[in-house]
Length: 226
Image 1 (cartoon, helix red, strand yellow):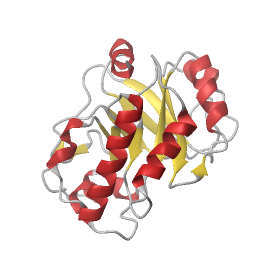
Image 2 (image 1 turned 60 degrees about the vertical axis):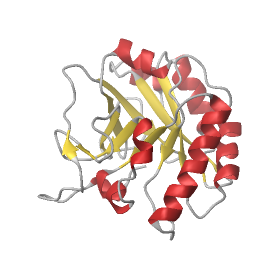
Image 3 (image 1 turned 90 degrees about the vertical axis):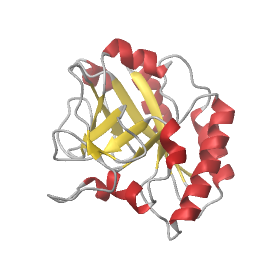
Image 4 (image 1 turned 45 degrees about the horizontal axis):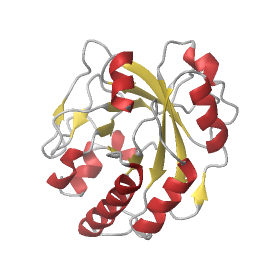
């Protein structure tokens, strides 16, 4: 994260995409990677935001060296926490899935389902991407007993042909500089929205911070995490 496809140009409309605004109550959060060094999650929690998401793995062997410390600190600060895997369709999806599961460990109450970061074609066709992604998702779901969350953008999913099979997975949509994000078919709504990739956020190191919303209240976020 983030995906360059999240910057849809004015007037652009991905195939089957509709704008879906947040509800009356939404809960703020942020997602970080190894570029955000020295985060203070307790200070972040004091801003009223409710969740933090951290990159765990990428490909077959790239683990975020800061994952373990951020993962523990998010929980300690009383926040809902999530972990994501940056997907490459040109790598073995079973090995990639197992690598993610082993890195994150057991998920519990207050942990979001595994997040599948799907934003690059990796030199593969749409059909190959879809096949490889489904294997990763199936493998992780079987291992964790949780239905993964898909992070993507309307433009990227349009390139994949908006496959209907992924409608069962909660959507984490990336779309910046808009008041209501574009939701690609086959989804009709979103659970999480990455609405900015820059900005200063108390407690999070650096000025390039991915800022997110959960489409619901704090209580609903905790229910979603269960």
